[in-house]
Image (tube, helix red, strand yellow):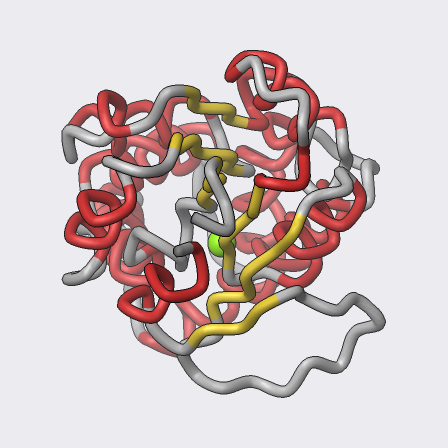
Amino acid sequence: MRYSTVLFDLDHTLFDTHASEAAAFDATMRSADLDSSSEILATYDRINQALWRRVEGGEFSPNDIKVRRFEEFLAEVGADGDPVAMAEAFVAGLAENGELYSDSLATLEALSPACRLALITNGLGSVQRGRLRRLGLEERFEAVSISGELGMSKPGREIFDHTLTELGVDDRSGVVMVGDSLASDIRGGSNAGIQTVWFNPNGLPNTTDVEPTHEVRGLDELFSVVG
Ligand SMILES: [Mg+2]
């Protein structure tokens, strides 16, 4: 095998985060007696993504943005609501909703006899733990690193160092990070001195200065990259 240790991202790589967020957002809006629509969800998405970029930049921790995203959202749409209650409903909904992509489990099963598998995810501890338990994913990884639990986030190298220390991996030449985000997964892997696979299902152009080692359109291509 070219790589003996494979580090996976969760959101938008193995897990259908878009569906999870849409269902959680719907439930949150219902609980706050507010109308939802795809436009309103898009507004929330924009605010949320901008805040996560500030987490990636080190300005906020994941926990800082839990309520803040609903404060900003309510201000922007000009609605009355309790951002704390909405944040709680949303976090519960994120853990309870969403499934793995159809080929995620088969990919992990194909790799696991030959490779050590770990997960490195930027997210809230309660959300990601809830999803991993519900989907039976925790036991499929030798190490699970969640930024909200550890106080370190991709693309910083610390969360990679922490994970590789937990695995007892010293030689990084056999380690590869797989993820959809150039800003967190690919830059993070590069910061940590490991190889990277950009999971790019929509064939987006790379407009950044970071170069993935490999690029795949589907998880089914991963076995030939790793093997
Ligand atoms: Mg991702």
